[in-house]
Length: 239
Ligand SMILES: [Zn+2]
Image 1 (cartoon, rainbow, N blue to C red):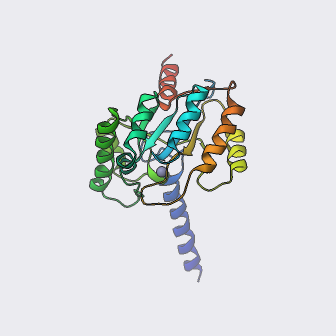
Image 2 (cartoon, helix red, strand yellow):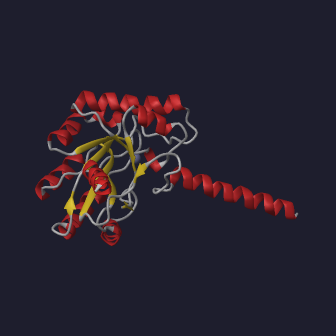
Image 3 (tube, protein in one colour):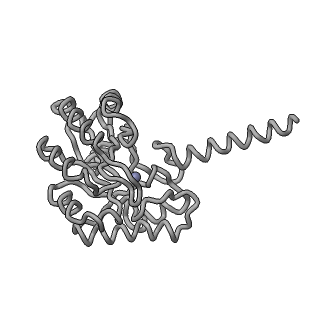
């Protein structure tokens, strides 16, 4: 009997370890991943995943009104569906990152499949926006073996987040509260302006919460694109 308890305990510990390695936002085990910027910068970066989608123009209007640049991690399949929104993101000076073609979980996928997802999205984004993304965000935040050599080959950096708004499931007030509580200098915030290809839902809560978050945070922080957060990190550590 005791051996069974040991067996289950070891299995559970192994499971927790693997989960940390592939899923924890701050995990650096599989490869270097940008999670936040320097804490003394006064900067924060807003990021939007899974687009473009129906809510993208509303998000862009709000960012434009506030004079803010953000970073959008696009799915290739959604760019094919809403190419004019993808173009607008680029034209309005926002940064574009790669969020795969069809938004699969990368767990257990072969390097060939992972490369296909990333490189196909890269070609579609470049075709419609003229931009070659240098940033990659894994769907569901899940990294896997073989991912990082593919990112290196495509000269891309993996980006996670330090505040997750959970805007895809929480009501507006809770999204606002979570973000306002979590934000500090250097924070990278995760939002969603789109819905993964072939999934349903809307981003009304994101749009409503974003308006309030921008009103409350405006003036207290400098909003930057993720690459500006990154270059600040590099230049400060070089000094
Ligand atoms: Zn996603």
